[in-house]
Length: 159
Image 1 (cartoon, helix red, strand yellow):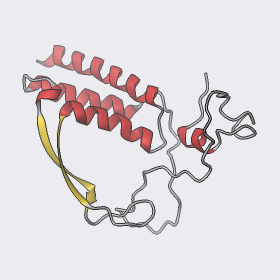
Image 2 (image 1 turned 180 degrees about the horizontal axis):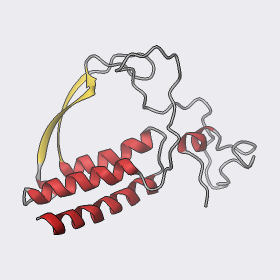
Image 3 (image 1 turned 90 degrees about the horizontal axis):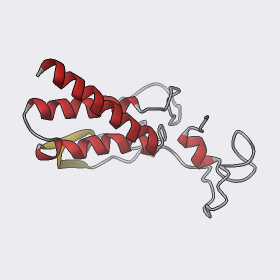
Image 4 (image 1 turned 135 degrees about the horizontal axis):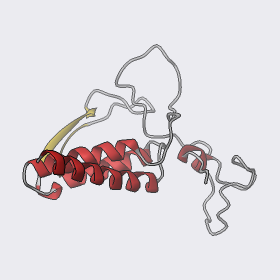
């Protein structure tokens, strides 16, 4: 089965658009595509000489590798500490929300200090790929499943 990249699915969902010319084929959806939608990624935190617009990378979407390794990492870390991911709370300040970097429209992002559990981190890691226009939700949830399986194997082999 072949799926559009999310960025294309959002921009070209209307009838007459998309790879087949049939839009997304969802007759129950009453919203139209948004040809001007921009993914939330590609912050300008690392100055480059390129004037290119935001893009989504050209790698396979299923399952999400980001979701896979994020889940595997945090599940393993929690197990090594003898806890569940939801029981470990961390404080985080993002390099992208540090009061210096800019968003995809050139606005400086505020500094945010967040506290959350490793379980929250697993879920936010998954959904971040959807906001970037790189993955669909099923890519992310399947990546989590693969990551959990990897964590179980690592824990069984080394703990």
